[in-house]
Structures are given as C-alpha cells and as structure tokens.
Image: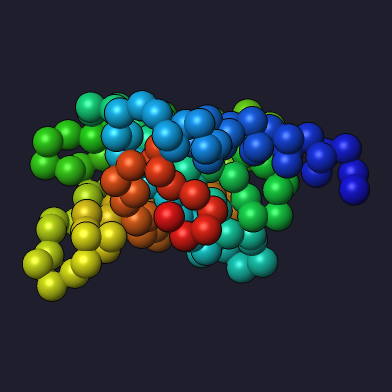
Length: 149
C-alpha cells in the first residue's frame, strides 16, 4: 500500500474513532447526524462518502472519496425550516471542494423512522464534487456502528 493510502486510512480511523468506539457509544448525550454516499455526476469519479453531525444550527463533519484519494472538512448551518448550506474544504490529498445547498425532507408517516428527514441537496464544486445527494439521518451518532446501526 502506498503511504498516501495508509495516511488516508489512518486519518479516517482517527476522525471516526470518537463516533464508532464502544466507549463513545456507551456514553454521552444523543447526537443527531447524517451518513451516506453519493455518486458524482462526472463520469469515472469515485463515490463521495459523508459523516455529518448536527449541533443546534451547526453541521460539521467529514467527506471523502471512496477511492481514498482525499478527505475534506464539512462545515455549515441549517435553519428551523430544514434548509442548509455546507462548505467542503480539502484537508488531505485531493479532498472534495464545493458547496452543498439543500433541504431536509419533511416527515412522512408512510416511512420508517430510519427513512425520515433525509437531506436532499445539490453539490457544486471542483472536479468530481458535482452531484445530487440524499443523505439519511442517524438519530444518535453515539450508537451508530459499521454493522448497520
């Protein structure tokens, strides 16, 4: 494996460790967030993976390409009506750079709780960072795990 890939894997593990470790899952208040992936509208580009946490009106997290070519910091805000704007700033490698604008879906009584209130948006940015997004909510990131939690 190249040093670049090892560095990206290490950073990803460090960034996700507070969310995915058993000690984090066992403690702390409920922390809402969003996880997901989306295909770029640019042919031949890797999927973009998302891990976002919401704290009041603020949204923070990471986004990275599925081929581990880069990682970015995500910051933004959401209003009471569910409209949001996010900025992606590359932090490692060829991380995605762009702006995401969208709306949280309204609650639908015909959907399961897990399918309620997804983020639906458009991303415009550099290179592969152009796509339509639907990111599902996670009601407690402290209990989210890689086994489908």
